[in-house]
Image 1 (cartoon, rainbow, N blue to C red):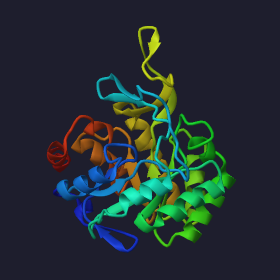
Image 2: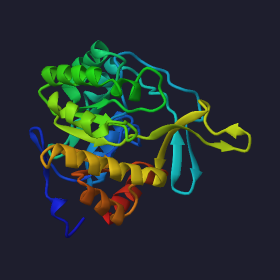
Image 3: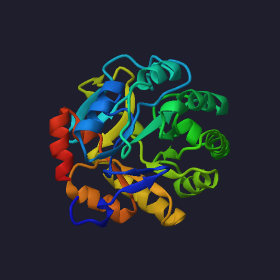
Image 4: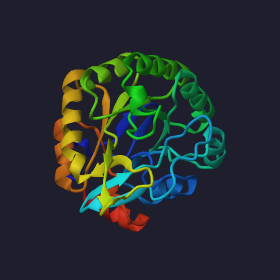
Length: 289
């Protein structure tokens, strides 16, 4: 983004990261091959977040899991499907992450020990961890964990103690005490925050039938941008200028990036807007932002 002061590299842990755009968890870069390809071929990307990984494999929901329900608006319910921490570790070990890029490994669980087991296993391939405290449609995980402030605090403290790398906490826009929860996460040792996840659970239908096999899912794209901006602004006012905030939710144009920057974001997650683009198109599109 020429002309903006946040073009400069940003320090994340031991790395000076080049590229202020972030691939959010579960979008595009869900396997080692696509992670490698995006880092090498799309220079505007500084951070890639992995799909959310649990200690044990999880099947998730049957298809359809993702659909556009209106122009620029999407709904999904993947169900946190993933191969498990050990399998993902083995997949990622051969991948060499460039020194100026950052692999943010998203992990989730239902309790303290399941988060720690995932973190222990995946530490060898992580530049940082993102704690998924905000998935809106997987019962017993995500937002249900993030709503329990004491559990969030204990999980964050334990992962920070275990891992000598930056830990981010991903929070939901619909938390009734979002700003205070963000303060709690940082007080527990988090280096930064990711705001926001998809919003839901919501129902979208064609005629009489729900679009998704799971019936309900999380909304992304244009419709949630006002919520993302409000969340970033609220949290930035509460936590001050220092903690790193990854802002996301409906970013699709240069003006959207500027809006998130004015609200207080340091890094900018682009997800739904990349739907259908190959790496060359992604490179051109992100360069235009």
